Image (tube, rainbow, N blue to C red; front, side, top):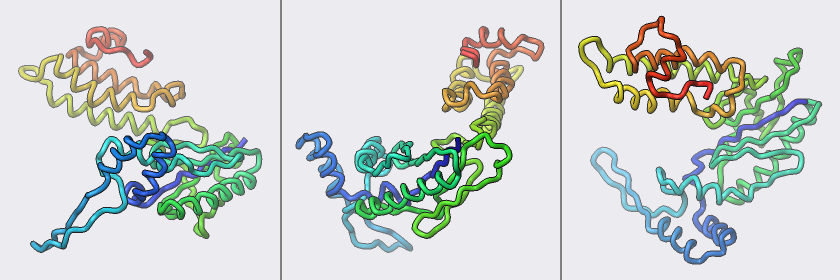
Amino acid sequence: MVTGVVFVDLSAAYATVNHRRLLSKILQTRKDTRLTELIESMLENRHFFVELGGKKSRWRGLKNGLPQGSVLAPLLFSIYTNDQPNSVDTRRFIYADDLGIGAQDADFKVVEERLSNALAELTSYYEENHLRANPSKTQVCAFHLRNREAKRQLQVDWSGIPLEHCEYPIYLGVTQDRCLSFKTDIEKTKCKVSVRNNIISKLTGSTWGASPQTLKSTALALCYSTAEYACPVWERATHANKLDPVLNVRCRLITGCLKPTPADRLYILAGIAPPEI
């Protein structure tokens, strides 16, 4: 089977949300007038001006858009786009403004046709809801185990613009690949943890340095959070054990142990659960 996925990109997704449509959808979803009025009070009476070269423009009111940085912004955007069209032949993978549309079949051409039809439906939906699609940054990728057709690219157009075929698309911060081996993503994570280990090493020294507890807290915040990101997705991958060496280095920095110290003892001394747990 071949699975094709289109990773949709929107231009200024949060900034183009229409307030009237959003409030209407909230009222239809929750049937709560007070909640709708509360959200309306948060969105209305928002003004701005531009200052350039010591000169200020006149104040203007915001009729569209969600408050940037607000914890409610992703939730409100999810409500706003919850009624996106979803055809029977495709599946949606959506988190806030990150949308992936997948289609599966044994034939590449069937997958291409289904994705093209889904994008055509999405175009009219975006126009009705004042959202701006960005086909030039939208990517498509094929997932399969057919090594003979490893270089086969999906030919999908959106509004007359051919979509870019990406071999290693990034979705929600995780780098994908054709076989879902997550090799590239794990290698990137390993490099990130290694860089953070170098930062922690600056806090250690033979005659001075931070306490083990401080080093542990720093390591958990900088290294462990990075190494564990999306691990339920790739933890069973063959390449997952490539992270172990850099995690062992982190524990050696915390405990001050030398290389001959067995790896399983490092985690006991550091008071941190080993990677396999």
